[in-house]
Image (tube, rainbow over all chains, first blue to last red):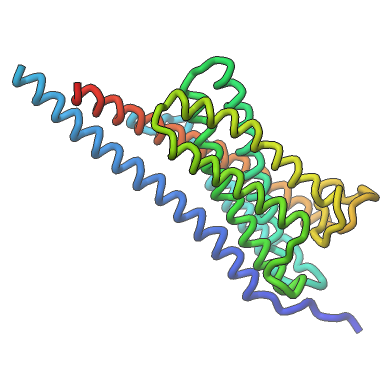
Length: 55
Length: 232
């Protein structure tokens, strides 16, 4: 009589939750870093323009 | 610099579509392994993330060598970007390996040669990040980082070959016909195709992530130079 495979559904779901979870967090970190740098860049460019206008 | 280049967008779409196809194949096309059951499906992305991680470190090695030859800061950026990506994806490999090990080996963790060497490799590259953050001078940081990335790469072949050099319970996937391999792993053709697609998907994903991470690094450099200009 053939033996049924072990019931390991929860482990598979846990594994894929880790895979897609960590990848999602990493991708979000890219978006956040990029957005923060864009904001910094815009602020600094504005300050630079103001400095030039004063001179 | 600000808008995403068309070619990068194409790579992003290709990476997304390929990872989606690989995911669908894992859950619908690849057969359920006869003994381990559904948990074996972790294998496809577990190995693909390990491949991506080791590929990252290989790219970092190449970038480090080029940096030391050319002294161009761009290659330092490629190196640190690749190592960051490698750290993230090898963390996924280690955690998914532990999840797979629990029902297969009846333990979350064992100090098996493969598990030990992959942990050492991860710690070696985590230390690289710490080393960089401790050096203020960019030129010195890049030089030390490049030398470290070259020396640290020794941990990659050591990890890859550990299952061939030592007695281990970890299965050999690539070259499993090797008589020296103590573990074994047989794939059906369906499993092989799904595995190949997963490897291709994660390779394209690596290109996409590396490109984006380099752009973030370039933007950070631009912000730094703007700050310096304003301070003068």
